[in-house]
Each structure stands twice: as C-alpha cells, then as structure tokens.
Image 1: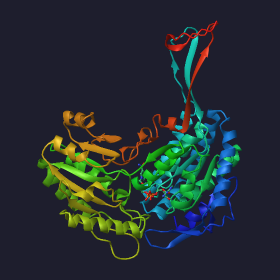
Image 2: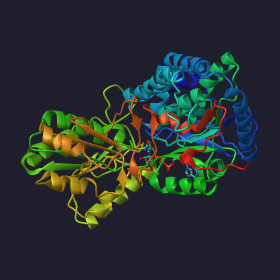
Image 3: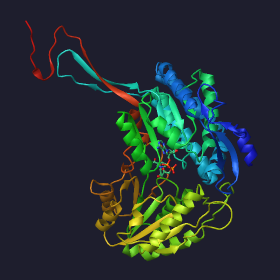
Image 4: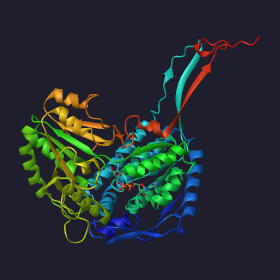
Length: 507
Ligand code: NAD
C-alpha cells in the first residue's frame, strides 16, 4: 500500500486531534507533534497534542463512563471486544502497514502486531465468561466463603514506541472485559497508529453504545504521562517502557497507593550448548537479535556459547549478519528496518564506543549506514565477563557473545544482569534443559528451550522479573491485575461463631 492510501484508509491524513473522549477534542491548545518516517526522516502527518484541559476532559469522561460500563454483564462486554477484533481483522492490512511506516519494523512484523491484537480480542472474549472466583471452605458451620472480582476503575495505559498497538491491546482487551475503561497515552514516536486504533474503537463503541470505554490522550511523557501517573482517579497504571522511566512511574504510583503493572526493559540471553542443533540455534538467534532492528523488549542481547560450538556458530552468525537485507521496512524482502530516531542511532554509537573502551571486540557491523533514515549495521561484539556496557539495555542491534565451558558458568553470566525478561537455551540434553528451567536456572519471567527469546504467544502471561518490573500482561491469569478482589463470608446459621475460636460474649 502507498503512504497516502494507508493514511486515508485509517483517517489519519490531516493534522489530527490528539485527544478522544466522547468525541475528538478538536481544540486542545497543545503544541503540534510531527510523526516522522524513520526510514526517510520525512514527516508523515501531524498531531495536535492534548493540553491540561484536554487531559481533564478525557479523564473525567473515562471516570464517568466506568460507572456505566462496570454494570454491563461481562459476557456483553465481551461482545463489544469481539466486534473490536472483527474491525481489526477488516483493517489489518492498512494498520499493519502504518505500524511499519511510523515505527520502522518490517511489514510482516507490522501485520503480526495487528494479528496479536486480534488474538488478544479473541482471548478476552472467552475470558469474559470466565472471570472466576474461588469458593473456600469456611471453618465456621453454615458459613460460606468465596472470592469475587470487581472492575477496578479507569486504567491508564502508557505504551512504548516499539509495540505501538499490540501492547495497548494486551491491556485494553482485558480491561474492557473486566469492566474497566481505558485512558491510553501512546509514545510520542507513534501517535498515528494510536489515532488509527482510536478511530476503529470509535466505530465499535458507537455500535455498542459504550462511548467512553476507550479514550486517548496524546502528549509527552513528562507532561501528559506524568499527569496520568499522578492522577488519583486512575487506580491502575500499566506502564511499558524503559527501566529508568518505569522506576519513576512506579514510585509516583506507589506514593498515592495506586496499583501498577510494569513492563520494562530486558537484557535477554540465549545459552547454546555443544550438543545443540546449531541450524535451529542460528535461525532462532538471527530472528531474536536482528528482528525489529534489535528494538524488542525481548531482543536477544547476549549469546552464551559453550566452547565446542563456539567457532562453528560464531562463524556462521557473522556471515548471516553480513547478509541481512536492510532497508525500507515496507519493501518485500527487507528483514531489518531503521532504528526509530536519530537519538537511538547515537545511543548505539555511544554504547559501541564504551565497548571499545572496555576491551570488547567488534566482530562485524558497528556503523551507521550513510544516507537518509536511521539505518545501522547489526553488530556482534566478542564480550568477556565484566564488560560493563553489556549489563545495559541498549535499544539497538548489538549482540554480545561470551564463550563458556560449563552450564554453571553460563547460568552465572546469564543471571548477572539487573533485568530479567526473556531467556532461552538450545540443547538436546534433557538434563541441561531441565536445569535451565529449574529454580537454580534462568531467573527470567520467560524461559524457552530450543526457541529464541522473542516472539511470545499471547496465551501465556508476559513479563519479567528484577528491573523488568514484575508485571504480567496478556494471557493466563494476567486479567486479575485489572480487577479488585473481594473476599466475602456469608453466615446462614442462627449463631455468630468467631474465627479462630475467639469468644466475645456480652451477656
Ligand atoms: P520510554 O521509557 O522512553 O517511554 C515509554 C512511555 O513512557 C512513552 O509513552 C513515554 O512518553 C512515557 N513516559 C516517559 N516519561 C514518563 C513519565 N515521567 N511519566 C509517564 N510516562 C512517561 O521507552 P521507549 O523508548 O518508548 O520504549 C523502549 C523501552 O520499552 C525499552 O526499554 C523496552 O525494553 C521497553 N519495553 C518493554 C516491554 C515489556 O513488555 N517488558 C515491551 C515493550 C517495550
């Protein structure tokens, strides 16, 4: 699809309003924000950002709409989410292309991101009939004890640039069936995809008469994001972004006794043992390390290879890196697009400078590709234990490789970073695989065997430990974070026995 065609199919071709709350806020007073194509540096379209008054209107609307939405039976809420999934199916091609155009990931990944939204809607529809609570045996005669789950309130969803729409869907589809309304603050790098999704939501909300269930507010993290984080009317903030920002967000939300779901940075590793199927490992490593130009939270950043496989694997990997087709993400055949902006290119070059200072060796890549756009060479660094820069998450395609002799050594390096998101081992030895998955193995929220670190399915709970923040989103029982739990005890006897045998009889 041509740029013009994509924009007009999704209604984001003019200067767009940056706030939606029961109608687009056309006069918001906030400054304009230009969305740039990272492959060319050109302006795609502009957005007018929300100012304080627009924020207020959006949040008040979400709060008001919550009072009605929470009373709609959950399976009916699920019907609305099913329609959202249908609308996304109908718009998959254009929205996937817009994700690629604005964020820079290749088209197949842009389409995959929209598919992930559709999958999340399907999952949430089923969930809308399964918001189960437990019945618990009471120690008191003729008493019944059970847990139930209530909607929690408007949920603030702050998203990162690299999954501009899928992460919203992880949150929004669950929140909607749980009876919450959503206030979305997207990344300022990707406002158009957010607007396009809001247009889709508007049609669905109009059809179901539930305007105010999904709301949007575009603006900088420092102003609009912080306002949302500090807002007592918003009991839950789901934040996806860097560890540095996530730390501040979590402190602010905790200071007002709000709940937060934190999905922060990763520093993911794969261990390759001598007995691994190296063909499989090579493919898994290339997708995990080079896919999305190294801009996934689950991107492979550290490769830990046992001595007997090291030369064979690294030789093939270097060759693979040099033949990756880099270029326009919308062009068929491209496997690596640009970094999101110039600052990301500078961050990568600064990290490589530190690699040199700290004694790492660049085996391939290491440069910005000249010409328009934020294109860089995917880079492999021969690392050593104690290479400090490898402990940071540089959001770019840099892969640090370590050579080890034993699984113990591999695990020590593996777990020695502050983040704990995704991990994997390639091995055909059952004992090594089980050890990697055991209590003394990987310390990450995601641990795989003979699969790379990225490309998770939505059915599992997604998230990580340590400085990744501990949040869980998407599948399994992640929905519980979007509701409040209530434990209820009903006495249907004619007596009032107290728990733990306590006596308190006033005669
Ligand atoms: P970022 O931290 O710069 O920004 C994330 C979001 O936070 C943006 O919407 C931004 O505007 C907002 N923000 C910034 N300051 C804020 C503040 N004070 N209050 C409220 N909001 C504020 O991250 P990014 O560069 O957009 O994304 C890349 C990072 O996100 C990486 O670290 C990556 O690992 C992480 N990420 C994590 C996951 C996960 O699920 N764990 C998924 C995607 C991305």
